[in-house]
Length: 173
Ligand code: S3P
Picture (cartoon, rainbow, N blue to C red):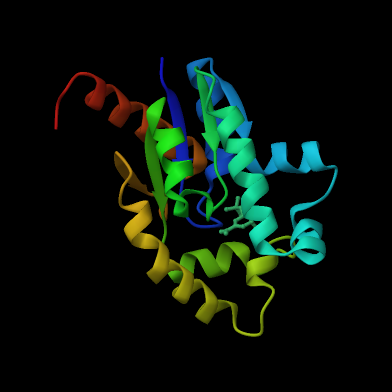
């Protein structure tokens, strides 16, 4: 079985859905940000603060290169991971790419009390979300399919992914 790769903006539930999905399908769950934190021994926010975003992106690319060599995994990516063409290609090579979607207001509600997302530690997070989303949507649109997560629990999102995955596998549109 191919990997299932979850992409999408911060706060769209990639990690929580990924865990459930992996359990339901008997696959390994791999969270790219967690692997980055484990291998560097630093929190994502520390990496940003000490070395800056470009260094974080290089580490992210290295980790994706390693992870995407394996099969039978559900991979949760960080929200900016697939902006690098190289990362997208590696993930796509062995995986089905699923975009978890939510509107900017829902994203803001979900992330507003969270301090460990360095890109959103700004005066106007709503504006920042809007800017980043506008830039990123064309990249997220390259996914094999998308799920709107706004009205669904992580469990329901996982179920929908399984349904879509089966449909795709059986060649139905
Ligand atoms: C980022 C999203 C984060 C993490 C880092 C950068 C982004 O992951 O990789 O803070 O660029 O959107 P989540 O999407 O899991 O929050």
